[in-house]
Structure formats: structure tokens, C-alpha cells
Image (cartoon, rainbow, N blue to C red):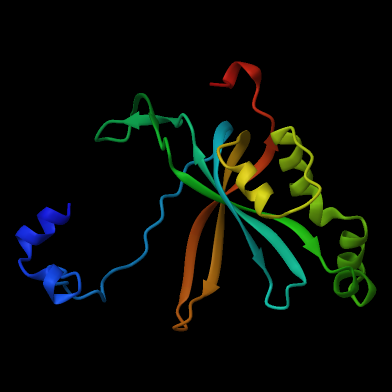
Length: 197
């Protein structure tokens, strides 16, 4: 590789820095984020690719940001030019779906000083931990501590879940109203023995 660099950029090593070939970039104003929205599907096998911690600004509410990839794809209908269903095909293999799982809510903020009765009851009954419990059962492991070792251990684990869609509206930083559809996961559960690879 170093020989290739010397051939393409003679004198780069002697100059004391690596030379990058200049590449012109067109105007970036028209670039917009595009997300793939996966159609709803029940009993989809997912591979946990990565889990990272997230937290509110005051650190009183913490969660895992989890990215799951669809292992085998989803069977979707195919159509002809007139929109008539002609068959089915597997699509979306490897598509990523993001999922949040709460693992901590500060009892002082969410229970002791919480003025909203329904919200207070939700946290008193530990309902914010239901998704963590479902994830723990789906993985067949006891989650008693969230730390770097757990985050590493979660990688490449497989679960089954139902993929759903949710419509959302929000105001972007520039003040424009945005409507979008995103995927979310429901009913995380253990992978059946006949679906294991």
C-alpha cells in the first residue's frame, strides 16, 4: 500500500504528510436523509448488531439504543405495472431497525417528586422496565447491570419481534413541520428452535 501511495503521489513521504487526491464535491444543499421503512411483519428474526447507552440531558432517564438487522428478509407481494399482485419475493434482508429500551429512571424525579398521578404510578409499578424484561427473556439471559461488558455480550444475539410502523409529526430545527413514518418493534421474544441457524 505504501508503495502505491508513493507512485500516485511522488514525494509524499518526504513532505512529511499524507497527500489526499483532491475530489470536487457538488452542492450539498439538495441532499436529504432517506430512510427505508420496512412493511409490518410478524415473527421476524432479528440480529442485534449494536447496543449503545443513551440518556436524557440530566441523566435521570437512561436507555439502550439498539440496532437490529433483519436476518432472513421479509416476504412481500410483487405486482405488475397495473398494481395486480403477481407473487411474492423476499426483501429487506439486512435492513436495520432501531429500538430503544429503558433501563433506568431516577426514582426521586419520576416517583418522589412526580406531580402527575398516572405517570407516578407508571414508574412506581416499574412499567418503564417492561421492554428490558422482554429483551432479557428473548435473549435467555439475566440483565442485572448495564455496562460495557453487557453491551459487548449483546452483539450478534438473535431475537424474534413483530415489525410495526408509526406515523410521527415534529418540528425540525429550521422550523419546518415534518411528517415521517418510522419502524418500531413489538413483542420481543426468544427465537424458536426451528428458526435458529
